[in-house]
Image (cartoon, rainbow, N blue to C red):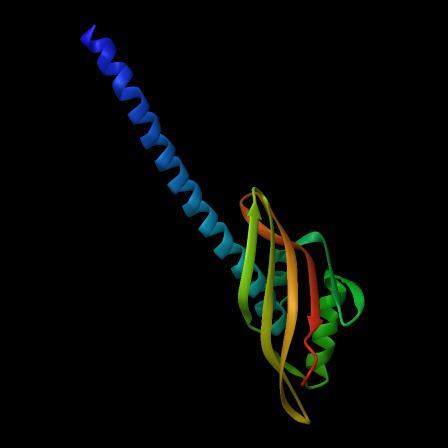
Length: 155
């Protein structure tokens, strides 16, 4: 009888401890996912900055597409757009700032301000873009499926 009372008194405590540990693990995993989502977007910019299409493919899905400069681009078209701009002498700097990340299981979306610049023969021009991306976790790796960019008008 004492053992039965002890078991009834201990079981709820063990359940609460297990729930707390589980929610801590979930919170830690969620923070990790949010950081990985932002890093995936940053790696897209590293790839585009270096005309590294293999790296670009590593962080995007096979059916990736983007809305940028008022048009729709698949992955190869977007990479070619940047590569051609580099060939014409343009140098881009992109920086993901103020990321607002939302993760729901294996899906995520992120909205952020891209603060950067474009340098060409006319000089350097500071610019900002409002951007967002939709990602999916595939085999433990976040990949960008959709990307959207809108330039913030100059003042």
